[in-house]
Amino acid sequence: MAKEVKIYVTMGCPFCRKAMEWLDKYKVEHTRTVFEDSASKMAFYAANKGVHTVPQIFVDGERIGGWSDLQTHPFKAEIEENFGK
Ligand SMILES: N[C@@H](CCC(=O)N[C@@H](CS)C(=O)NCC(=O)O)C(=O)O
Image (tube, rainbow, N blue to C red; front, side, top):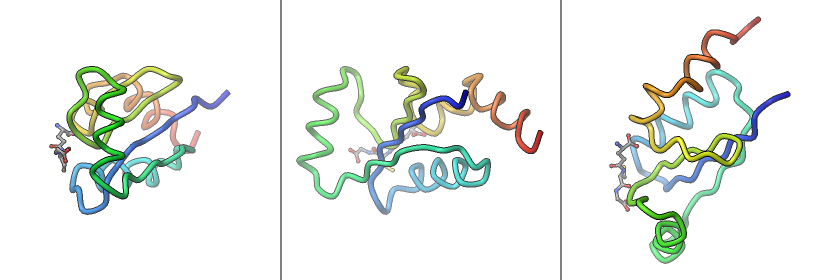
């Protein structure tokens, strides 16, 4: 069964763009939340202890972190290894 993937982004953020492009490239089903203003982003940061940047990626409720965190997370290898199989 596919994992539940969520990503939180702002527009004009290069790391967010990279993360969104990766999700699209590997056809990872996900829900995307785009913070339209600073207040909604800050509320998200406040609700997620230790979070100060976007993007933020969650897989089955676990926070992976941002684009750089994704590079070393097993979820990335899992998706890329299974792509097209
Ligand atoms: N290492 C992080 C860096 C992310 C990052 O620096 N994001 C910037 C926007 S591109 C950010 O969130 N800055 C603080 C803010 O906008 O609240 C990643 O790869 O996701």
